[in-house]
Amino acid sequence: MGTSVFVVGIPLARLTVIVRPSLARTCEAKKTGRLRAKLKDDDDPLLQAAIHGASLRFQETFRPEPLFVDPYAGCFLPPNVEKDMEQYPPHYCLATKFIDDKLLSTMNHIDGLKQVVLLTDGMDTRPYRLSWPTSTIIFDISPESVFKRAAQKLEGVGAKIPKSCLFLHVPLESSDMLEILRRKGFNGNRPSIWVFQGLSVMTLADFEELVSIVSSLTMKGCLFLGELPVWLAESEVGSKSSTKQWMDKLFMSNGFKVEMIHYGEVARNLGKELASGECANILFVAEHLRFSDDQMETWRREFQRIEEDADEDGFEEL
Image 1 (cartoon, rainbow, N blue to C red):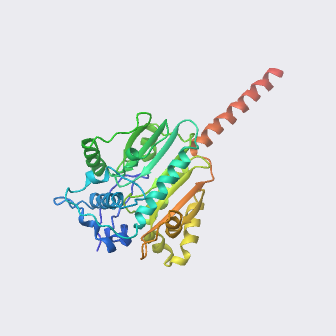
Image 2: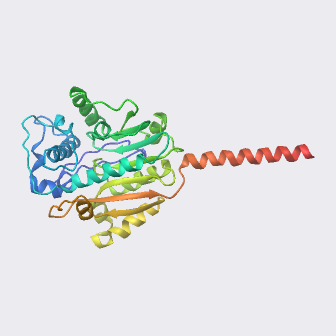
């Protein structure tokens, strides 16, 4: 039975984070046993989930034809970690490659300041390993204890953020995520792209509330993409046949048009074979169709100013 841990404080006053190691990456763990990469003296389930993700990226890096290279994943693992060369890349690595490519292709088409929000497990190395465009601000929302541990490891191996970019951490345990993001410089009047991969599995109600938060901060036309656990949908609809309808309803109610991406399609586009077995996650890309709260407030003030100017002009004519 999975271990549960409760972290209070994410965006909405409270957020129950439930770590389910048996579900988080079931399709990979069952076949490869890559959960060998554990710390001996630490049973923190948040940390173990993050280490497992790093282990999968580490294994992928050493494949003959890797989907991506993560030169920093190994610093989170024991020095004697075994390399398991499976014939086909795991679903998690296919999703990682898909998200990497989507991130950079989207960012390269944004003029001026660029904002990226990574909802992660605390060991996401994208800020260090991807070639970010100039003037990119990267926000990492993750468990503080895991992030601090990872930051020390990364510093030890000389990992650096590009000089033209800014990297900011927002603790998952923060009491007011909206306020902290804005205080750290997030601007809802500028384009942003949000990624959900690795953040510890949440209850359905809390995930719905998180989508609402993303919606309030995201400009019209911006993207929210990543992997969400299948069990979130199945706990609501009870069958995979209804998953698409559930996804459409959840995201559209928050102003997003969502598309479910099939791992098999990603594999074919990359010239790879899909690993056998069911995957525990749903890969998705959602486009925001509403204006952000900041956009609405800017326009409200502008309309108010226009009305006040019109009133003054009318008074002078009298």
